[in-house]
Image (cartoon, rainbow over all chains, first blue to last red; front, side):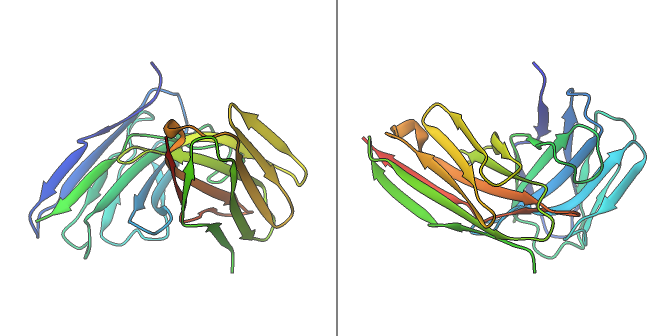
Length: 116
Length: 108
């Protein structure tokens, strides 16, 4: 089935460690996104990529890094520089048409990161 | 400042009790409004896209409508399986903006 796969679903990290969240899609979508979701807040954009080997910072990029070496994959690294990394992370994709065209986003199932 | 506000934050209904969720927005150059459903611990599931004032879309017990300032998600005769958080998002000329969501609980 076509869709977006995020892994791991749950992840625990000690302070000072970097962790990488995986996002793979087989929808043949050009654009991919990473969002962070905290209780009582709307989704906030971390990074997005419109095409392979290109990505842009979103509203809260500090302490995060990404890569886009393949169309299907858009991993997110949460670095030790991120002050408050405990959150629910969502990966999404959409068809081409610019960073914010009119097409809807399709989301993965999310990854919950907890810093111990 | 572009903003999306959803109300109420939480809504409890009895099974069969119809109601509406509100998404009000202040954005320049609206290009589309989306509704999503999100179950606990899951990613949002796409429901509807609305592009212009007066547009309506339906899916089972849900009906979404759009005016120049707000959108409503009407839920007719809800069932317990409709319990979820409903997210609204708008696209303007340069950004996708999400509201905080309305958490709906439908009791049998």
